[in-house]
Amino acid sequence: MDAETDQYAPELVRDNTPVDPPTGAAGNFASGYHLTADLVDQAIRYLADHVADNEKTPWLTWVALGACHAPHQAPFELIKKYDAVFAHGWDVERERRLARQIELGIVPEGTRLPPRNDMVRAWVDVPENERRLFTRLQAAYAAMLDHADQHLARLMAFLETAGQLDDTLVIVMSDNGASQEGGPFGMVNAMGPYNLKREPLEEKIARIDDIGGPDTHSNFPLGWAMAANTPLRRYKQNTHGGGIRDPLVMAWGKGIAARGELRHQFCHASDLAPTLLEVVGVKPPKAINGVKQMPIEGTSFARSLSKAKAPSKKKPQYFEMFGHRGLVQDGWKAVCFHPPGNAFDHDQWELYHLDRDFNEVDDLAEREPERLKAMIDEWWRQAEACQVLPLDDRFAPRFADNAKRFHGPRKRFVFHAGMGHLPTDVAPDVRNRSYTIEADARIDGPATEGVLIAHGDMTCGYALYIKDNRLCYDMNVGGLHHLIVSDRPVPAGNRRLGMSMRYRNHTNIATLLIDGEPAGRFETTVGFVAFISWSGLDIGRDRNSPVSHYEAPFAFTGRLRKVTMTMDDDQALDAEAAATAALARE
Image (cartoon, rainbow, N blue to C red; front, side, top):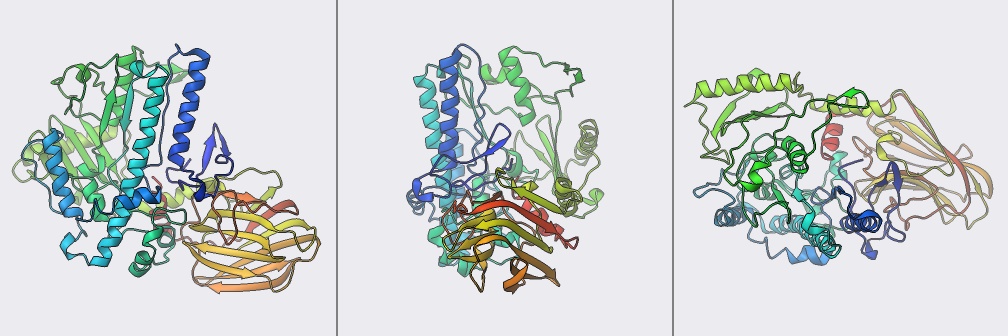
């Protein structure tokens, strides 16, 4: 299950089986479907079923929204509402947010903004046309969050109506800081750049009114990600505050007496499980089905729910991601930014006194070298105890190795009629390689039409289909369509309909095949360099948003027996680009 999916035509799983979105919603943005609303509908249904069955039995519901992970998608009327809200730019926004945070007591009096992050320009230096673009990208993010908030309110209202709210512990949390994957200029459709297809600034601006819609996969630029992390430094993927500090909101009518209060104790995601176990009075089992369980690394913070001045945990807390490291202990933090490929021993460590400088502005490394050395030594001890070692910053090779695990040496796939939806990670890997598609189908006559095989969605993917009695193949790379239409009609009867892709010298040469005979071709240097799609594969239809120029699902009206895909052993994968695309999913 991926972290990233199209919000209008999502990859959905019930139990362990891929399922379609509600009837009539798949690929139909105009229907008003959105994943957030659907997930809340499902949560309400589960809870309603539970109350009907046995309302006194304890329950756990985990509502994991797509918001606000990319793609940033929300109703257009909500997006445009935020243009005026953020027209002042990210510098003013940071100042306003910090002032509001101080006023609310979320951050201490005297907190100062750190300098802008690398590659972020002053807003006054951004040209007007770029300001419009960047503001709209931020508006899509804000609208997606607003939209999510509205539906969470709907879920809370149901709990109250069902008489469940007062004795329900509600937890709202996030998983990391704001994303840096949008880069300096943001993205309208990230699928192109992930395949090394440039998205020029002019193209982004020309598509400004598409942002947040079904044919976009947008993400905001670094400046707005920096503002989202106010007043912290850096971003997701990093171990500075901007990467790892997140809100935690808890409410429990019968169990937490505090109302609208703040807690400033340090806690970590690993501390949540022991806290909940303590709250409900359950001791974790030492073994399950005879399998010894790993020790829980976290520390309960249950005391702080009732005691505002309860001390923070004493145990040191380590952080690590791609070689970026950090350690929090006794109100201090040691942290380093690790440039990929740099020797770990050469990384520059920083030291901050969080009790006085929670957002890491004043580096005390030179003034307190002994403390810093002790904390670095403690980081290594914690890393060894918690199985962080050996450190591995092989960014691209790690993701390339992971990709190989899905298929191993497999080069031939046979998809028989009746097959369900195939998730993208286990679909044929056609990136930068030669391959052949062949569909075994019966054509009843000139009116026979529909999709033979489709992998992807409106933003990226490929499809082989029949339309207007012609065989068509479309390689859609980030919205750039490379379409072949057969030079002759498809005859009635049992047919072998396919496409042969030859990859030679960074060039893709596609040839349509009707009963093995060529029927049209294209040649292009654009292709699936690192990425096909986060949407999966279907035969006989295109269940999600349409890859090509038809309306989904465009089901095949003849008889499709099977589709066979055979891949040559000539893949020349760009590991660095593949890793960048894969990381964006996290």
